[in-house]
Image 1 (spheres, rainbow, N blue to C red):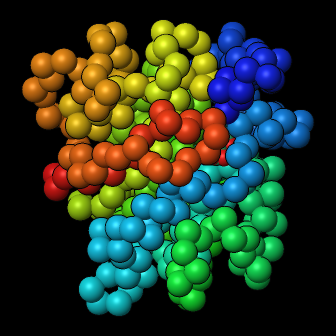
Image 2: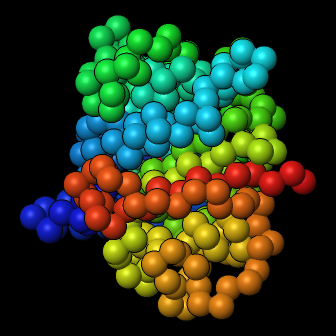
Length: 281
Ligand SMILES: C[S@@+](CC[C@H](N)C(=O)[O-])C[C@H]1O[C@@H](n2cnc3c(N)ncnc32)[C@H](O)[C@@H]1O
């Protein structure tokens, strides 16, 4: 999002002012109105995440798009925006699903996907050998991640469990009071053993400053591993853990935590890529 770009302060201001005095349960309409007024450039990065491309291509066992029985795994991106990462995951073999609260975003994502699936841009791939893979399906749906009444076409409804979920700038777009709900919803939609991939951004921003984007240093660890509320008041180390943290009450275990070699300019050198595994209930 644009708070990382000091040359465009008025854009960051526009994002902040949209949500400043808006009741939290009305934030969804704030996002929809930004989409409807053509202001998605406030956060849109214009391509699939290089960090996600690299991890999917490197972690071929962990992120194998096929089950041992040979079925395609289902990957889910809530708050998917224009759907860059949904399309990228499909191009790497997953059946990929994107959920958006904005109907305009869904239309734009569908039009983007239909072009990219016919003639994929090079940014979807780190290495040419991955371009030969047969793509999975792409499906977008308008719906609120926090409600329980969204239904993708076919056999995927709110009770369907996904194998993989991905978050980039969805959590940081939410008011801090919605974070616990985000973690509970991620736990609800993933299978036991399912993987939640997070490109953590922004980690450089003071968590006490207003958003979106809201500073997230230590937030993923607290929500997912410790089972906290994601409201961080203590200093946290560079690995995201609070000093002397011993709690592990969350629904997830962190299985990977790396600084990606490639990321978007906005988070280069500070973004972290984490993979959390959904525990068995
Ligand atoms: C900062 S944007 C990030 C979009 C996308 N992940 C990307 O990287 O371009 C946050 C997105 O979340 C969507 N969103 C906000 N609240 C939502 C909700 N409750 N359910 C589904 N989508 C939501 C917004 O419409 C917006 O497109």
